[in-house]
Image (cartoon, rainbow over all chains, first blue to last red; front, top):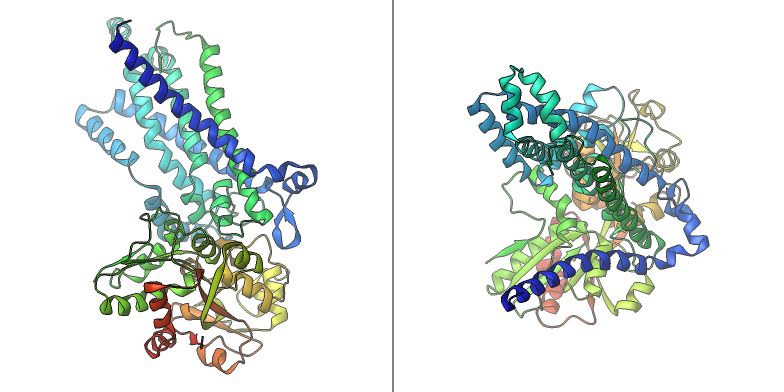
Length: 291
Length: 282
């Protein structure tokens, strides 16, 4: 290797190492600061089924449940929507419309979540409250709808990109056989882009899991576990934001680190799941298409 | 004259925008501050009940000292105490007396400059304007969950409460609920401004707020026949009262001292009573 190559190799190695090191350091930092929580008696407190600090109950399970529920609902709403949109942009829409849609979606990826929260508080929440006879409008449903809106653009862009990465030659071959757009989609594009679809889906899931403001503003933040979509709920991220102001030495404050660890492991889990799935698929399309 | 306010916007942008931004004030509370307390900067954060007075006092102060910049952030009492203790701000406001442990740990010096009531509020469209203490306790513990049981419409009550570090919550819990339970079904909002939005926007909501924030957009509820007004706080008839504190790490010096002195001056007292609070002597 030339000297110059070596220097750049070293430089990039250090940068990558620093990035990876920071990520790991954050995890160890949380474990270290949250350590008082992990002796037997206190740990049991975290497993209580309720969060009632005034009565000495510090259960985090309702928040884990709420986070999982809101993320699942928003993905159920956003995935079909995004897939449909991506197919429209890539395959079905006339060129000018597809280009316009694509630009619009790109623009939407940049909207800060505060804006969605803002609109949600004044438009969506009253609408949800008036549409159903029960509840205050601050609910799992409102938060899921807004989160779906937040994560869809990212998914659509990734989907469109993975569609575009399907080799043109295969498509032309199919066209030559007189295939309809539907046949192209089902037999070439979707199988070929499966890894990309998976990547987009999991990235969106991670984003939904990590978002704080939308849930904080429109989900209502009740400590109790929600029993339906119209019930209010508090996510792990909102719990961190709300308890941040508590006294440093209190158990309430220390539970923040437990929440952080759960969120960290959750998103790490999603990433690992993605890698495992991609490896298992062994690219059955045989196209050598990578996300 | 320049005011840079985190979470506080000049008049004219509309009440909703102002209140909503107050709501985010608590997030802005975490934003990094310019390093080092330069001579011309006073950084303030913490309790949201203090903000109207802080804003007005900052304006007066900067008219006298055109070179000085004052930043005002929300965050809630807990954030104010923490940030001043760690030197992130010069003045940390709290709507409760910092605990002995907090005072000792950070070497805080307390400046109590006003008394503030914490009043129960409902939506303007709600006909209910008075509750007994027993009723209030039953509502907040969740034993009463429908307005019908209080003589109102047949609809579920939306309980609104505040986050763990809130001074308003602590005082309300101690003095209005006498340490009774707050149901875990209560929705939680992160500031006085957000509480006002939550209750003003929902006809079935009930919450509690600094009397300084009470205005026409929501309706105050009398507790055992005593309405949460400045007059009743002043006369001592209204029982749910707390001090508003501006805390400094060590004794206040220089500009910070001057700013705090302003709060105790006749001008300061006028600002304080103008914002619906009761000024007190040092």
